[in-house]
Image 1 (cartoon, helix red, strand yellow):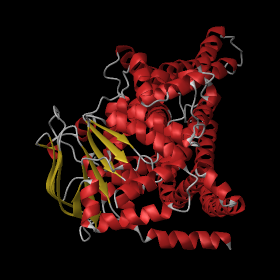
Image 2 (spheres, rainbow, N blue to C red):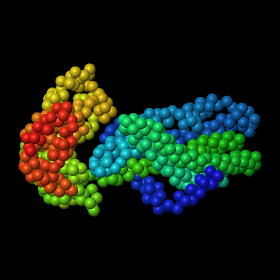
Image 3 (cartoon, rainbow, N blue to C red):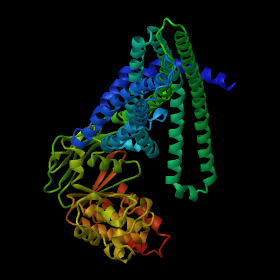
Image 4 (tube, rainbow, N blue to C red):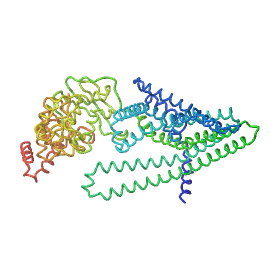
Length: 636
């Protein structure tokens, strides 16, 4: 029943030939991938690795010579012990040479001297290719757009990276050091038997090899769909595991441990179902290969024994030993030919997603370097939408003069955060332009633009590294003095010194060992160490309690003084001192002015202010609520 389902599924999947070609399994697409990898394989900048590369190939060729002469010397030994005169000749020289050849060859285990030396020299070449591909892919991923990162799951991307890099190494080893030697040995065997034995022996080897390879390729192509389905389920399984473990705190909050275990179990069942189909198809392939090899070996052995028994053929018992030894020596690696082909095919499958990552165009780049003097920020008739049919921002225009603070407030979904993403060039405007010191940022590289901007986000993400690392992350070459000064500006220097390991204290995964206020102060220090021309505060205090918010706000007021600052927030009490406040609704600027001017207009801002003050009324015991109420009374 299972195999019936297996073949039924294979028939359905065979109908998707166009999709198969699109996924890159034609010879042309394989060659395209190999061409892409060649620059990573050849160590063009390292002379020693170039020598190791060439020397490894010379050892590969020398191994073919050894494989040819080892059976020949075996024949000579047998003939010396069984000649026509009936006397036995002791040839120690032949035995010594034969044993030395076998020592270099290593027999069927492929662990001889030549292979060991070659593997040693190839280690550096393999590490070089892995490093170059990993760095190239890692660099490419960081150049992809903000939207791409938002749409992908971290676990799946990491799995694609690991599997893709590993598949490149496997591809090189299997093709160069497993497939190529076998093909060379087959050609040498066919020529040798045609010349020294009889053309029929060469024909038997040729037919056996051809049938074996064709059957292997055809069956492997058939089972490729099962392998791909299994890998898809494995990716999904990895994504579930990573997603669950990264959000363990939420799971515990919701008491959902059992549900998550069940979700992981269901994903595992789906994976094992596809894995079972893949392994069953592998059994079919292995059985077919074994049958073909056995038939070829039987045919050649019977023919060789017959030729020896007939006097008209000048063959000796030593020739039978030579033939049997050579064919068994040839069939030993050939028996793995299907495995090598499967692994190569799997490597190409595993590389599919990696090549798909490489094919994604990076975010829009500019060719010039942005130079900022004053830090003036201007939005000029900016419109934008994440999808063309729905505009989030509509004809936005405003200026943040150098050294002044402009706050953007408004209901959720009004487009406030989108403004910040445009300033940082996570996205580009659909219409209009954003200028820094009267320079359109679309002309400059995102990296150049971001180098002049520091951000204090709402959700501060810290790396599982030391406090020093996290503060200096915005400036990799920062000195200890610069780190300490930034921490003092954020008013966290003294607290850090009280920790057992001081600045070398590890903050934990995503900063879980730090409180919300401490994380936010580290984020402020990280922003200040850049000495930015423009500061962006994205709901920088909204996730904190009122008392911590008041303290953090005081620090922000101090560090932002004299700097061009753009604030996005929904807590109006934090922007009462802004030079100008923009009130947004439905992607447009509905009101603008100072805090007092907006209250006097009795419009949207005034209503939001009254609503927030009323919401704070029931908590008179909190000091910041009292302050907020005093501000409320003064402005009414």
